[in-house]
Image 1 (tube, helix red, strand yellow):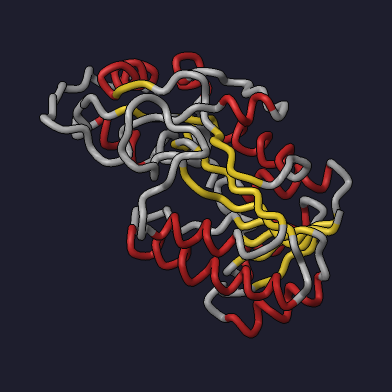
Image 2 (image 1 turned 90 degrees about the horizontal axis):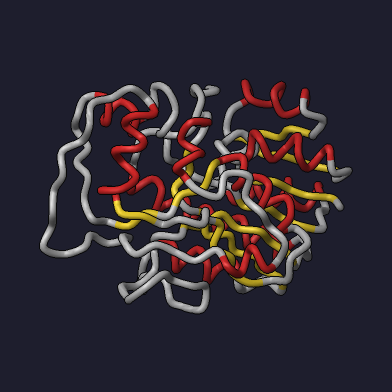
Length: 279
């Protein structure tokens, strides 16, 4: 399959490129920075430089690539800039989807999140709505204007290169005792399992899939385990009167039924495999 990957050097993209090439796909991977092209091409893909907000160049590159599939792995999470993240989900996705339409591409795989569901009881499944009016909802709606959208709602990534790795935002906060343990429920996924699901999802029927591990848990359970795994002091506990947004947890039953089996089915064992950052 010929694939255009937007976000070829992000946390998922940098692992996805060699996986796609190893699977026999012909990959054109886009990055914002010229310095990243060599990394892409050493993995066996073709690297191209584009700012996703430059719609004319993006349209030209997608048309030239003539892909069978577009993969959206665009994010802006390095500095926890929520405005930048929302913008890339709205404007970046709009430009990428428009480029796909103009190139006659009907299939897209999109990076979404599993903590944007509306409030409710129990674990959220894919038939439940994400927060109305959110950037996540806008991104997913844009993807659905193509004939074959596959939306991957990832849990919180942990593992090398994430906020939970050495030098990461969460690691540093926990080490300094700045992150309290609340009753907010989180769904996690090891970054390697997120990549394996993405590789498989190329062949899944269109639709939304929660890519999370088997054990959603409140921070009162997972945060002490994580703190011990990095040699940090036990966190303080904070009980809020109301659950915070995004604190519900999600079910992975649909992705498992499609054939995905996470190597790290629970954060309990996975946190020990977090490892250092990888740049």
